[in-house]
Length: 228
Image (cartoon, rainbow, N blue to C red; front, side, top):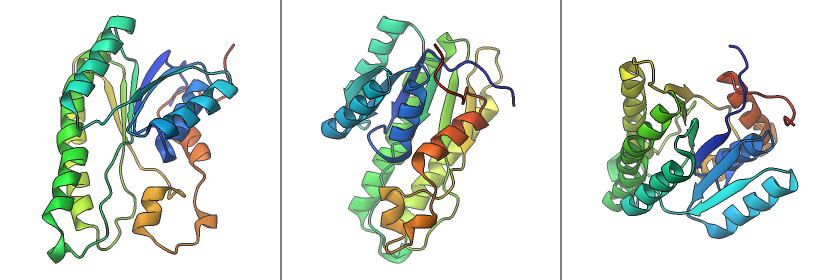
């Protein structure tokens, strides 16, 4: 795949930790203005410090993606300020406690559905017009490479999320439709993985920063040093 210019603007939902934070830092260090969305104000501020130390710029949006009004306001603000969105990277996810499939608590399943399916579907409808205004733009999502045991509720919602992504891919046939990517990261030393693989030797897991660079290069985004 050919390397293209780093986009001038990116929305990263789930940007406070793990792969989302690493991708936000990677893009910002290469000249992209990152709109970083997450629930945790403190973690977003830490991300902003790292981005600024590397010479990048970010707009922090401490919001819950399950709040429709907050997400509408965010997308309206992006439209009013920039008029378009070249790149959306979505890493926000809810990982409930490990539970046998025949014992999944309704409250855990309900929260997983709310974050991983309902809010995700809603975000697609809000962000799609901004991507289209960019002449197509790019939307990037992530799959799980190795489904763990005792995660039926989580995997069910990820399957629904995958269905939404692949349907959107199949339907994106117009000239201004976004390029939609569903990527599979290598196993990384993240908090979500630690929940699913307690006691795992983390020394063999991929570094989130290196994986962010690899994944962005996989979809053709500029992967060298910062442009001046």
